[in-house]
Image (cartoon, rainbow, N blue to C red):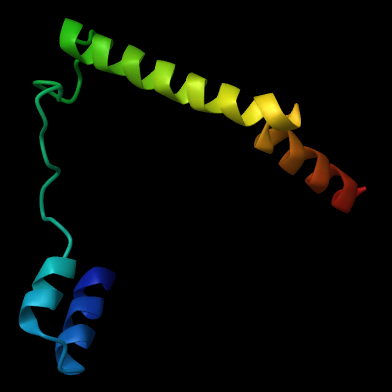
Length: 88
C-alpha cells in the first residue's frame, strides 16, 4: 500500500466526508496541458511551449526585480549569508 493510499484510508476512517476525501486523493496519471510534449523524450520544444517558457521566465524576472528594488538584495542572497554565518 502506498503512503497516499494510507492517508486516504485514514481520512475515511475518521469519518471525513467522502466528497472531501475524494477531492484530496492524488491523481493516478500526470495531467496533460496544451503545451505538454507529445512524448517523454522530446528534446525540442514546440514554438508554443517555448513562448510560454519565455513568458514565465519574464514574469519571474520581473517579480525578482521588484524584490530587489526596495531592499537591494535578493532573498536567496540573504538566505545564503544567514546560512554562512550560522555554519562558520
